[in-house]
Figure 1 (cartoon, helix red, strand yellow):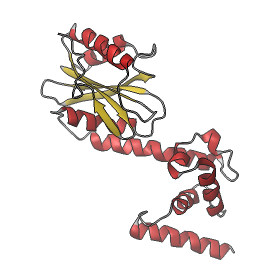
Figure 2 (cartoon, rainbow, N blue to C red; figure 1 turned 45 degrees about the vertical axis):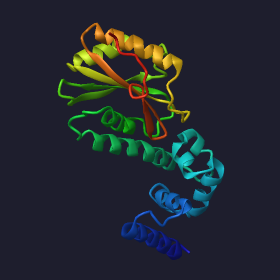
Figure 3 (cartoon, rainbow, N blue to C red; figure 1 turned 120 degrees about the vertical axis):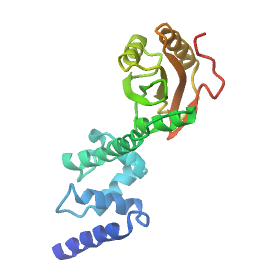
Figure 4 (cartoon, rainbow, N blue to C red; figure 1 turned 90 degrees about the vertical axis):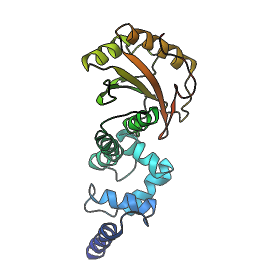
Length: 228
């Protein structure tokens, strides 16, 4: 049995190395991943149990360690590995995006910001700071919570923009609900942010709302929030 089990693992690993995951089922992909956290156990039943409990592969990978460890066979090591996948994916996307030197259009700004929100389950606000030539100076997390919440400080936004010597900035936040349409509160808060930035001669050129890997540009959608 041990030889059969070992042979199955090697065959699945070699199949991945030769052809990638394209022809794998969700169960097989999870089974392969769990090999590296559960070394001496058949991971196929555990993979099935995870998918049956959470309903899909994406929901398994989005689950918290506490929820994952409720599934028999999921150790602390396995829960850590599973929750690492999506966050490492976000690191990868952000790292790839940072090699973009200049963002000369609103669409380019939106596409640059989207990876920062990959697999986030909480509303998070980022500030993208650009110089006069639209070169990226920094993209920093301002806080968690909706843009109109008490945890998001307009003062912090202004201080971050000033510290980076930004000429223009783009605000970005996500809607984990999956709907990227700006709320009335988003619009009103954006106006206040634009006015505060204008007072120190920094222009807020857009506010990007991200959901499910897509985004809505408030500037392109006709929202008027720029201070005159």
